[in-house]
Amino acid sequence: MLKLDNHSSGRHFLHIPGPSPVPSRVLRAISYQTIDHRGPEFGAFGLRVLEGVKKIFKTEQPVIIYSASGTGSWEGALVNVMNPGDKVLFYETGHFAALWKALAAKIGLQVEVVGKVGEDTWRWGIDASVIEERLRKDTQHEIKAVCVVHNETSTGMTSNIAAVRKAIDAAKHPALLIVDSVSGIGSADYEHDKWGVDVTVAGSQKGLMLPPGIGFNALSPKAIEVSKHSKIPKAYLAWDEILESNKNGYWPTTPSTNLMYGLHEAMDMMMNEGLDTIFARHQRLGEACRRAVAAWGLENQCQDSSAYSPVLTAARVPEGMDADLVRKHALEKFNLSLGTGLGKLKGKIFRIGHLGDCNELSLMAALSGVEMSLGAMGYKPKESGVVAAQEFLK
Ligand SMILES: *Cc1c(COP(=O)(O)O)cnc(C)c1O
Image (cartoon, rainbow, N blue to C red; front, side, top):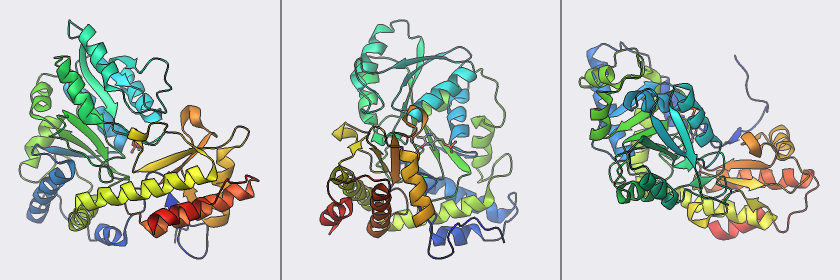
């Protein structure tokens, strides 16, 4: 048997901000026998999944399910609604916004990045007034879409998407609003319809408690209409054939049958717990984690208290210390996986995931591992973060 567990006893503490731990119920569902994806049983199942997933995105509109990672869903969102050379506006909240922007450029779109002048945009949530100002200047309506990341996984910031919609409307601009909630969906509140999002991009392996392998595009009527005239070449990612097949619960190509069993099970768990209860749990865990970071005397990468993420917390280590050595120690000694610093944050931060199937005691275990690892690096915390988090949680 394949052995991927570096520890002979106990469980692995997967506290990177995605992939997140997969609950046993979901793992069991995934192990059901694969069935004929063109058979009657699958069609009925497919319809149930396609209906169920709308509740997760809080939409009445269709949700595309791809066999792809989040990146494939980023691409799917753009190639279906854009035309070659179209201008797209990005707000760079971190590494994922930057990667998405790079993908847009690779597929032939013209990209423009905005951010609040004089601010390190990797430390503050989106300032929607910057977007509004830029759109007001675009009197020719050259900008065809505004692309923003809801929960920026590289920096631990959750931006206000409703405010971005308001900014677009206030500028009376027709640009589409395309939102990446790959790591937000399922852990942070998300309202596709109410917030007026045209395409929401998501993935399976973060807040939805599934292994990697499926991606989503939630659509708006406007996005569907625009997609009918989009001229970017596309085949596998094209919505039209998928939407047509989905009417009967099928896909044009072979869907990830077993991951969809898992999705069905995960959605059942989420509906039983209740979305509001889930979001409150993540807010609580986020607050506990931030208190621990503050008690250690470390800085939160996110300086904007209105953008604190319920999904993960990114802690900055002092100058001269390598955050990856803390992570290395945590993994080797305590079988605890922490998220690395991405892009320009490499070595400067470590990220603690508290998304998906996480509860008070799993977070406490992670915090304990971090505290011991910081100590092993010779760092003397101001106070115990473990105690600070416990005080809050009890
Ligand atoms: C994980 C993630 C992605 C990329 O998803 P992949 O599944 O790795 O392709 C995109 N955006 C955000 C915000 C993410 O957290």
